[in-house]
Amino acid sequence: MSAVDAITLEVMRNKFEAIAEEMQTTLIRSSYSVVVKEGKDASAAIFTTASEMIAGGIAVPGQLGQLYRSVMRILEVFPPESMSDGDVFLMNDPYDGGSHLPDVTVVTPVVHDGEVLVVAAAQSHWQDIGGKTAGSIPTDATELFQEGLVLPPLQLYHAGKLNEGLVELIRKNVRIPTVVIGDLMGQCAAGAIGKRRFLSLVEEYGRDVVMGCLDELHDRAERMTRESLAQLPDGRFEFEDFLDNDGVDLDRKVKIKGAIEKRASDFHVDFTGSDPQVRGPFNCVYGPTITELRMWVRLITDPAIPQNDGAFRMISMDAPEGSVVNPRHPAPVNARGTTMIRVADVIQGALAKMVPEKIPAAPSGNLQHISFGGVDPDTGRQWVCSEFSVGGTGGRPTKDGVDVMDMGITNIDNVPVEMTEIGYPLRVLRYGLWTGSGGAGRYRGGCGFVKTYQVLRGQAVVSHRGDRHFVPPWGLMGGKSGRPWKSVIEYADGRTEVVPSKGVFTLNAGDKLHLYTGGGGGYGDPLDRPVEQVLADYLDGKILLEQIGDDYGVVLESQDPCVADLRETERLRARMRKERGPITWKIDRGPELGRE
Image (tube, rainbow, N blue to C red):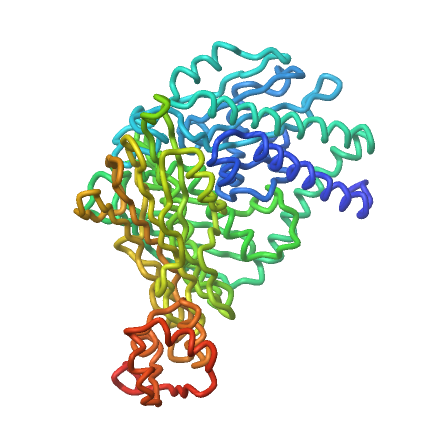
């Protein structure tokens, strides 16, 4: 039994979470790049010296879940007893505790009376880390060395003194050094805040009380998670899903197969049967792969469980070495985020067989990452712009999916159009919902969006990291698949070209890139959706006219000529909104829709 009373323990839990949240806020507000300060592709947390997370900010689950391996590796290379007050460390090597090169981890020890009590960690996605293409996500990379600067665990500050040589090395290897070093200093600022706030806690409550809470909070998270998992069915539940391709062999799908093995409160996932590592950069090293398992354990258990690594002591994973989910060095890994999302989809599909009443249909299945880069002819300066695109979430057991919502392991924010147009020689000509992209169901999948970019001047090299262009998001319980993603280049001379999910290409002034992001899968039989909701979906621009009958089996009784002209005029949409009552609908449940 803990010597700390329950009230103090709960106060400490919330204090730790508040520290992590303030670190996260500092990280976002102190950074320079659009990808961090607007997209929020960054995470912050505090860890024990045993590499267990004490608390994390509301951030990117995929980063929080993999941070512990970076922290663990830094603590192995630089043991806590060798650290001094004012030290700071960094690393990004995917094969030595990292995930992919753009995700750089910065660790700040919190020293009290000469001893490291905890460490504060911040991970940011740097907008450029060098490599063969601007933005450092070359989808045609075939080895790690093409992807950018590899940083093993290194010391950035020693007793408060900056390692100028390391900073200069970074500057010389990236395209936008001011932005990159600005983000690095933002990570240092987050670590400084974590250090300051934790030491204030020690001063207020005493070292023994604060440190005594750590083990108890981790043990409590483990107990509560085991109790929650024990209520779920035991057994083996398998599922498989596919990536469109690996960015190099564009005609070959990549299989990811997973099996959940649940016994009492132990939770294991076996990825045996997944494809071998691929030539392109869609391999995913061990740390990011296990992150999806950690995330789903959190999602299916009690939300009141403390957010710390004690909640994951009962999970384990088999990921065969040399497979796409655990590759060997120097396989390229820059696009591992797409594979992480598909791994999450596989675990979700297996969980849907275990507890279908808890699990939604597949989300759009992609965080599309596009990097534009070039030299602005007006200024002569090199520029790099990273943009994220998301689709809809899957229909849920009791609700529709959400339109254009990032979720799961990524949790990235929209980059405002204004920031893109102010900062770069790009213009966004169109941005709106992609009508009809959500999968039909009793509960409809959320819609994706349509977005059109145009290059205003000069040339832009584009790295297009997409997926689910050929393998659509699946529905559940009779729901239909969400609409696949697509991207189309429209050249200034009128020619068009479809992007095969992934690719590196050049756009010139006047060229356009049209993005169509996929919708989530539907949940439940579409013929069970109330007619009033089908009509509301059409009036709200969520479904197409033909889906009313083809997917939902709803036909008009009225022979009103205005209704017959529905395909030809938008004027009727306004009339239907105003005079919704007089228009009569009925459900056709006939055998032509496959119903007896």
